[in-house]
Length: 189
Image (cartoon, rainbow, N blue to C red):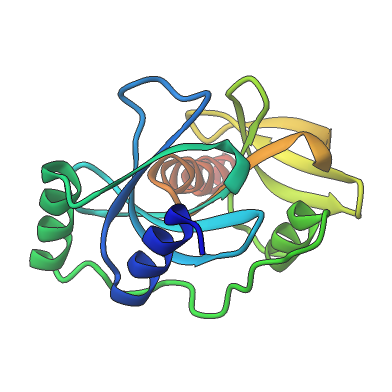
């Protein structure tokens, strides 16, 4: 087992917080949390904010990870805050990681026909937020949702260009709350 996998396994087994830095991320962008699951290709992180608040799941490719940070002051502080707030309740219990080349489809298919706003990060650090409108093994069509909960129309993307997926992170949840509010106010008019 590689050193990376030992750190990931320890995090998964003990819900030990670690930091993950990807090659393309800025120096100040650190994923912090514990590992829900991983395989040779993918890592599923239960992400937490700098305030120790649960910030959804993030699925990243193993090949994009440059650095794993463990037992450092920052990760230990975030874990302390999360445990202090009793915020470590698991939202998703049965997320299985795919070993297939089409991991994007396998993961996203679990959220098809739901009203969850999914954040999808593409190569070049471009992120889009939306609700899955249509999904097949090669393409995804999203009903895109803007920052203020406005519907921006439909966009179709190639699954192979997806770099990371985020479910129920703060930005997605904020957009969902604003979308519901906008739809409610539109109906009244």
